[in-house]
Image (tube, rainbow, N blue to C red):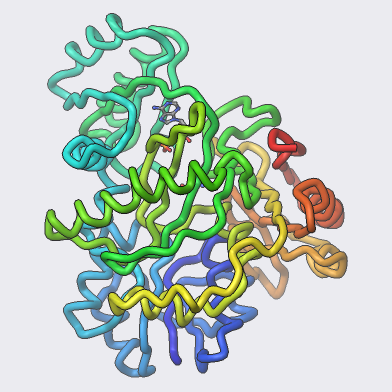
Length: 422
Ligand code: AMP
Ligand code: GLY
């Protein structure tokens, strides 16, 4: 089987590693890729914005199917372009991806299909005054969200009216570009968060081990929201009972609702949950795997991912491709560039990856590149160091043991990934 993987982050490095272990695999190509991905895949020299070039490449290299990692190409309609060229794709259509790319769409969809989520109101730029009046009457905290894609940074949990007002003004005033054409003002949900990935073929699904992300930049869940500073799996908060409710109340009606509305969901449905007293509600949907959760989740999943994704892409999900979703515990610690999620410098040489890997961790590349034959930092989130263990505490210990070997200027990581679940 020949596969093309689209993306260049830590999530795609984890997907590439998982796909590379398939017995069915002949050639794995990746674009734009990163130095970690290129240890197990060949570079596809194409721009991911050039849909025709990707389709040509697929025909040329006899690609059996394409796996799309990030949300931006899904929003740009890459799946649709490839499918119209007869190419099989694991990844939702532009319309199905709206579960992530438009928070307004996702919220209205959940209301239409009785899926539990926080109450909300939507406002456009000309309704800024109404939005501000609305938060003045609202109890605190209140959650303010840019409608569109904002790399995990378009959500403000406002503890004061002042913060709520400035978030509304920032978003509607253009701080997030066109992603902020609308603002969603949402009730604050209390509880504990978890993420569940469902591999979907439009109708059927298979859930992988639940995970917990750490979105805030500093220890103790302090500071700004980021794309994610670390994750572990499985998450004990998602008991069998919670998982059953998630399947019945959330995933099943989401898949049937999307099909009814003419946009069947094929790909990975990421359900961001808030769990309060054993009852799950949806904080967000994403239309792709989570980053950095995927690195942890796939590390404890045994099976043939090429078979799984291909069968889902064909609309004939083969859950038997996966033999075990609970093979121990994994903890993935993100090593970031100091200053992230705000400004940071890049281009610093990275040392110690092979020494770290000798201890048994897997080091996932996220923001790295090769410059004059040296591996250097090239993004906010640079690496993920993933440790495994029979218990969560062993996985955490192993991950941090690996982290100690890696050095680059301005390196920053949280020291408490997984601790809240111990
Ligand atoms: P989102 O991008 O929608 O997942 O939001 C990012 C983060 O903001 C979430 O992971 C939560 O920690 C927080 N958040 C979003 N919506 C809510 C909500 N309604 N209640 C409480 N926290 C929220
Ligand atoms: N880790 C959260 C996300 O991928 O959106």
